[in-house]
Image (cartoon, rainbow, N blue to C red):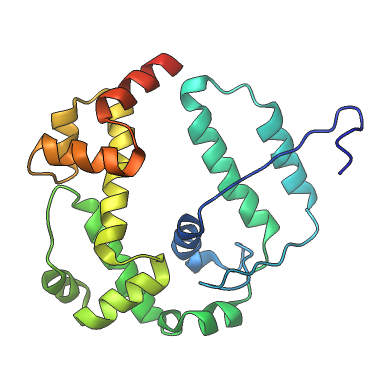
Length: 212
């Protein structure tokens, strides 16, 4: 890429390893189309950029999406871009993560994650969760971390807080959001939000309104 050439543009994407790992796990059932080499291994091989990926990059660089929707647009396009640029081989995927060797195990752990995110306002004990999906607690904890990159409650805490950002941006009050994501009181929620994002929910709301 010659950045000195007339009209040249650079697209730079930075993504946390844990989040990338999560994306891959969510798409594992479609690994024939989502091109990824390795699971839980920080080594990826990149192929020549296909024409459809070049068109997608052009969309990302030249879009006219409203500011309020820009983050959602870019997020969706980045995921689509990864689907075009990486090469999945099911053998390497399964060898790297033994919990994917058995599709039943993977399905049960996926189901556990879905139960958690569909019940953000509730605390579901591991014992109860393991019974619901039909896998013992040890394998549930170990498999979940292998597949999603984090222990169960670390994962769900982060998910709750990121989801709460969406609710705040939609106009819900802080105490309403705290209740929807399972915090017993707003003070605990505010403390967790500030510790994670280095900003209070109130300041986050002000920032979102200012960007509109």
